[in-house]
Image (cartoon, rainbow, N blue to C red; front, side, top):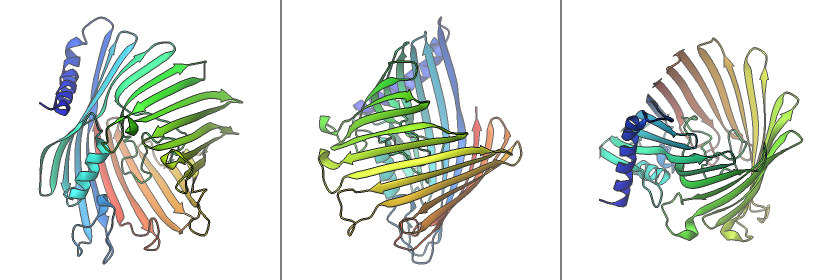
Length: 391
């Protein structure tokens, strides 16, 4: 039995055994989850081909391709006494359709969801047009006291104050165009936080490399100090992610009744000043208008300060979001991305219907516009539906 197989079965047995210990004193066990179906369709123009593995056309004459994802998630939480907490999520996923049959996608999924020392994703069966797999999105144990918090395992470490982009969140970067916005990836890590006041703390993280490379030089290590000043939350951080070193910080507060936030991160490529160094920054503001209308605007800047302006220029993008509850059960949302550098853009309307506390229907799309050489122009038009039942 390989070490990865032993790890998986150990987590499954721990998941099952949680129900047997829930009767002990000072012990609480919770079991929940959801069943979800997502249908995604990609519409291509004539002759359009992509390098993006997830959206590559399987055949040159294909115009419309689809993918169907069915997921059963079981979420267990075990609280033992006042200090110990464990959390295990087990996903069973069946992917079907032309998109999911691509080997490029299988490779991308494998790299994105596994780590060097603890592979928590495995295939149950696969064939032409389908892929059945299981994985642990979360598998962690936490010890928490009045001043200390320590967590080890597959976990989500949320840093930064951005809604669409997070320059300082290099441990769990998110995709601005993700279909499942509520799904946040995890990373195998050891996390420690020490409170140094009512609103201040120091955090330290050691995480595995996300490209399955092993060895101390590929460990990610970061520390973050946060506090509050003039009613604004702020933080500064330093991290080594592989061979790169990143310095940065963020803030969050209010300007009147509007939320106001920002992030800044400077990355030294290879650990020293070079032409490949990058600066990323965001500023955002959100506001709740009367009649239950929520708005958000966020700006994202990417620059290489040591490159000549004749060879590269800063890239500025803007995101905007407007959401409105049309009825107590029905809501509409409009999401827009605009790249000021090449004038390409994405428009993403979504509609959500929640007839019951446990049931959610969603209909949405991503409509891309721009030149063939632009950031968003070559992308196909995307449409998707989602049905989820939570228990």
